[in-house]
Amino acid sequence: MIFNALIDISKKYPNNLALNDLTYSQLLEEIDKQPYELVAYETDHVVLLKVFKAAKLNKPVIILPKLNRDNIIMPTELPECFCVIMYSSGSSGKQRRPIIQPERMIYENSKNVAQSHRITPEDKVLTVCSLNHTAGINAQTMGALLHGAHIIIEPFNAFNFFRKCIEYGAKISHLIPAHIDMLKDRKSTRLNSSH
Image 1: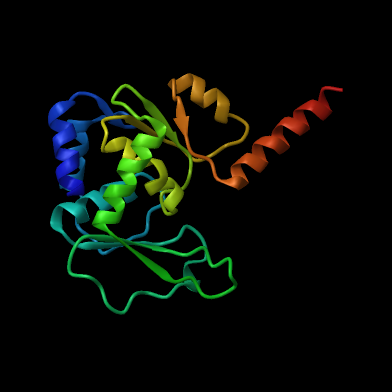
Image 2 (image 1 turned 90 degrees about the vertical axis):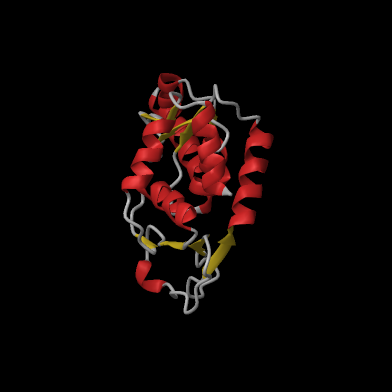
């Protein structure tokens, strides 16, 4: 379902930029080159390639959190089909636990993302959230890719976020509350230093 949706989009827009400087045709080639691994250790766009590789092979993929990886519980049983297993934030003080996201849920979420943001193949989306986090991979990136948009993945930087949006022509991004706080702090620091 997920990989088939990507194939359909790549047939429709083979030369559209898909991911950073990769076209949709090149993205498919990169996915094919990826070895299948159950666990994704990366924190950048390679996570996305591993998810699509797992979807193509109908196998699960575990995305490790970016930080505090020693405080996680590895799943003891795995589904025998494609799913994405991510981890809770551990904000409750308990050990991080795996959360299984079946393919149907990911696919429906990607449709909702595209509809709510009105994403089209002409759009450029700046993903600044870590792809180890549901905000990075699900809240925008998968939905935008599966609807023909161009994704630019860069780590969040409060000092150049707006400049990057203008530079790339990105009309859509997704920020978590911590990013908003950093932008507010940056603005207040700039205002105070100008007096």
